[in-house]
Length: 132
Image 1: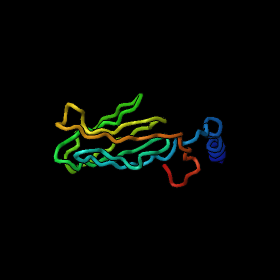
Image 2 (image 1 turned 45 degrees about the horizontal axis):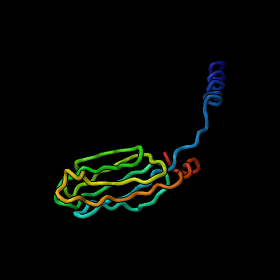
Image 3 (image 1 turned 90 degrees about the horizontal axis):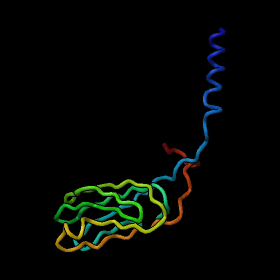
Image 4 (image 1 turned 90 degrees about the vertical axis):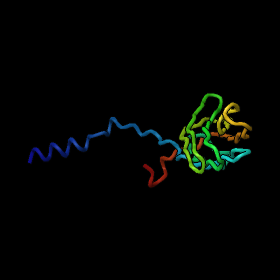
C-alpha cells in the first residue's frame, strides 16, 4: 500500500518543475518546383520565414543538381535524374533566395533560376492540433 502511494506521488511530481513550455516551431510550408529546359519555377514564390520543404521535379532530359542559395545559406541535392524528384528541407530566415538547377559551368545553356522571397516569421504551431 505504501509502495503504491509513494509511486503515485513520485509520478505526480515528474516534469512539473523541469518542463519549460517553449513554443513549437511553425508548421513546415511545402513548396513545389519544376526544372524545365529554360527555367526553374517554385510555387508559391513568397512565404513567411520558418521551416520549408521544397519538392522539385526534373522535367528535362538531363540530370541536374538543385541548389538553394541565399545570403547565409547554400543547400544542394542531387543530381536529380530526368522525371525524378528531390526535396530540400531547411529553416529559412527573411530575405531573398534562388533555386537553381546546376551551375553555369555544368549546363550548355544556363537555366534561369527561380526567385524565392521569404517574409516575416510565421506564427508558431503551439495551438495547432494533430501536430507531432
